[in-house]
Each structure stands twice: as C-alpha cells, then as structure tokens.
Image (cartoon, rainbow, N blue to C red; front, side):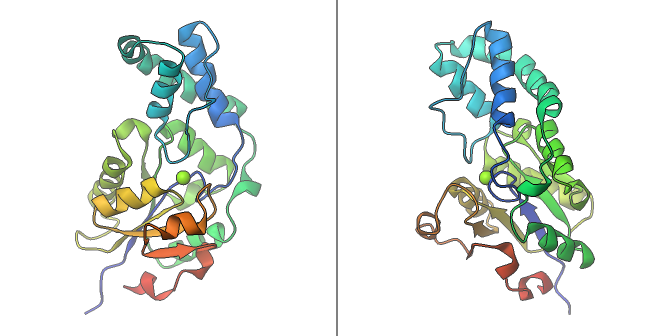
Length: 228
Ligand SMILES: [Mg+2]
C-alpha cells in the first residue's frame, strides 16, 4: 500500500527568505512608538527565531513600559504593525533563498501541501510571501498571533492542514527552519526537522542539536522523502 503524502511546513525568515530588510523591524518600531508616544527600538532585542508579539513585549519592557501597559497596548500595536508593513515592504523576489522556489514548485507538482509556521504576524507574513512571489505555493499558515510559542504554531498548522483535508491524520510532517526554535517546535510536536543554514545560525551551531536533515540548500534534500 502507498504511504500517505507528506506535509511540509516552512518558517519564513532565514528559511524561505534571506535578509528581507529592516522593514519588518521598522513596522514593529513604528507601531510600538505610536502607542508609547516616544521612539521604541528593537536594538538589543534578539529577533531571530522569535514571535513578533514577544519581540514587541521585549522592546517595550526594555524601554521601561510596565507589563500591564504592554498588555493593554498590544492589540493596537499588533493592528498598526500589520497596517504599516505592507506600506513599506519592498519587492522581495530577489530575497528568496537559493533552491526554495524550485523546491516549492516540486512539492506542488507532486500534490504535496505546503504551509507556513512563522513568528511573523499574519498580515506581515502573507505580505512577505506575496512580495517574494511565493504566495501561491501556500494554502494555510500559523502566525504569531495564533499561539504563544512556535511549538503551538506548528501544532496549529498541522490541525489546519488536516481540517482542510490537505493531508491525512497519519501523514509524515516536515518542518523546514533555520533556527534552534524551529528544531524545538518540531521535536515538541514529534515531527521531522529540516534545518537550513540560510539564517543566522551556522551549520556547526545547528548540527549540535542533531536535526533530521541539515542542508545548505533545500535542493539537496533526498527526493525519496517526498514519496513516503
Ligand atoms: Mg527563521
């Protein structure tokens, strides 16, 4: 009997796109600054592998804003960041990581579903995909506002795929990501992790966590895994 088709989940920053520019950071700073009535910076805040709302919390708390205020302001800040980003986001087609566009095309030709699992807020994430010319490859996604951790987001994305009948209950799931936090999210959900070296973490750093696959370019992924 043939095994069910696998499901592929992708992180965005450092995985599908490399160095997408400061616009995302600027949108968060703009929105936080608007609520605070003074400049709020991402400087000193680790953004890689993080969820947007956690980045915002750290930015504000570093600027001396109380937890209570942050919680009160958060809905407006999240809304404003998502309104602002599409206004300033440039063309991102040349930021797509090598091999990714062809790989997504390969999945589509085989009828294998692809979704997003990203720390980006939903409108920011979808807009990046649109500007990168990758929007049509993805039919669903889990974004920053849909969970507290990347582990929750990966679980949410799998639920969506199953609800949409894009994969079977028992299908094999692969998460593609550039960060240790992606490895953790995959492990917590008992799915396979494909780590790529196109983000800030080096091959050596990632290999210390023994991902199932560790690739410099997604085209090096053995094709057999698409068959099983
Ligand atoms: Mg990433």
